[in-house]
Image 1 (cartoon, rainbow, N blue to C red):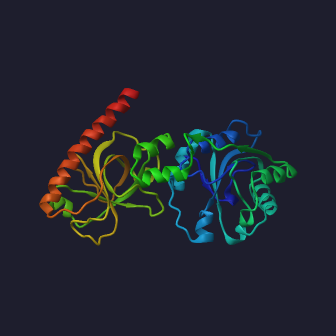
Image 2: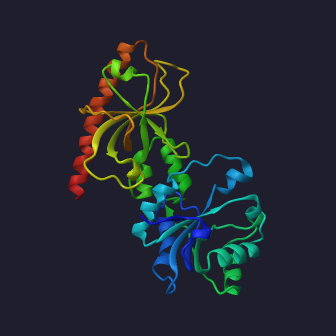
Image 3: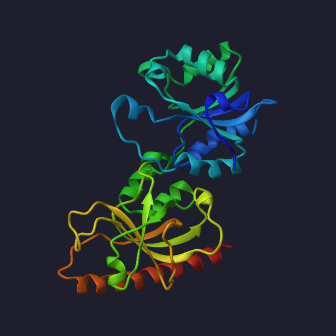
Amino acid sequence: MIPLHTPSQALLPTALALGSFDGLHRGHRQVIAAVTDADPVGAVPTVVSFWPHPRELLHGEARLRLDLPEEKLQLLEPLGIRQLVLVPFTRELAAMTPQAFVEQVLVGQLQARRVAVGDNFRFGAGRSGGAADLVRLGAACGIAVSVLPMLWDGAERVSSSRIRRALANGEIAEANRLLERPYRFWGRVGSGRGLGRQLGWPTANLQVDGRKFLPLEGVYAASAWLVEPSLASEAPGGEPMAAVMNLGPQPTVDPHSASAVEVHLLDRQLELAGCQLVVEPLRLLRRQQRFPSLEALTAQIGQDADQARREWRHHAKTLGDLC
């Protein structure tokens, strides 16, 4: 897997794509291709992003990510990128003029020979610099700057915000279409109260990184993979397992419970405590609801499981036909 570096650790000089690239949709890949297809001799193809997101520091907004940095590494490698560099976003960096940013960060720290950005790129204090400013300032420092246009899909541009909106509405197929890959997340199996086991539906309670963007609360058909802890952020290998997932609180058992991720592996009996699971939601089956009794809840879970099996088999057959 390609390395995750700070600016002081970066392999130099660089040909870099600059941006957040959350989701790595095809608009992002177009920007990245500008440095991997025509990078200067000796320059290391690099993606450079800020961490945390500028809006987190400046406005206190929580910015959940479609891809955490560790997940992004395995997505970038097939694109020809050799390193991901996270520039710490501090108040000192936020106060830099566009010229100071180019001279101190792009030239001084990263020795950039080529830079690629999208045409909506903003930088410098108060977002005062735009793509045209980067072209002008880069030329003065001997940096070739490529500005790539936004890509459109129907009446809207392809964007991370649009993918998040699809996930927030439980529209998994639409999110996957825009991502051009399956949306997935992973977590460590922790201990729960054991109620699912008492009801006959034991669940793995996943501890998911709180920075990860999760879809709409509800019950989903899903695929799951059991992976080694050191490989959890990589593309899963081996055969997927059919699963049904509950995302959210437990309105029947405890209406005041916190939102949780519970995964039941269909037709499997595995000891999962302490293991890592990669989960791929396939389709939203229903929203959460409160049932009049545990018996009614158990009966509904059985129906959810049957529907999830059918959905998983259809998904597996579709993948087989495509192969």
